[in-house]
Image 1 (tube, helix red, strand yellow):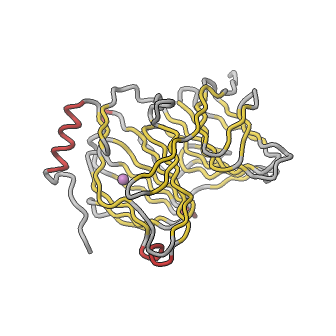
Image 2 (cartoon, rainbow, N blue to C red):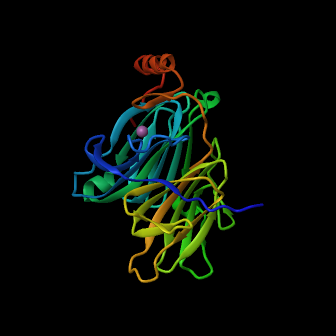
Length: 294
Ligand code: CO
């Protein structure tokens, strides 16, 4: 089998914006510069932002239909609650893989402890599309505590990876995804050099959280807040300069394209405008439920 290193086909710097009630977000896609990201719909790097006591901001009750919302927290503490009766607390390193399917109403808010004490909030929310055949499936939650996310280290200890979805360094993720998804958090120390295999049919991306990394055979540099879309191939090579003082954290994201039409309106992602109108009607008529207060 021939092995081909993926090169960067497009490199963008994230847009900066305020989301929800005023939460600072870096968003590499969707933007006019990067919109062909099938099967992904959105990539939000939340913070890092320091809130004082009482200042924390989240997203109160809102609906979703037709895709999956994946939250990965690096710092802070979030409470979530939904109309299907699920609730939980997200702490650093935890992942919540929420399949909205036919529809949920949920809230994503800083925990009461966080609100009281303040602190740093830092994380990611990524939206993964669902194929038409699964958009009206029942909602599903997978809450994975940090301790249950596989972590692998290279022999030279310069590279480590948290396997949120897919496979890396011989470890498989515990999260079950609807279409094949790779979601890896790599930490590379100065001098680290590593190769990750990726399905040749997948659309693949590298997002740098902090530091800088050289990607591919041409050693193209990707730095903090930048998203690189990768071209064809079945491998991606990553390298951090020996002479730098900074480690690099990055996310590798890859998924099989769904190749279906997308109709999108706010929190609903369907295939046709008629299905969007139906989603809005169903939400307004309360068919996606409501969050029951305790
Ligand atoms: Co949401």
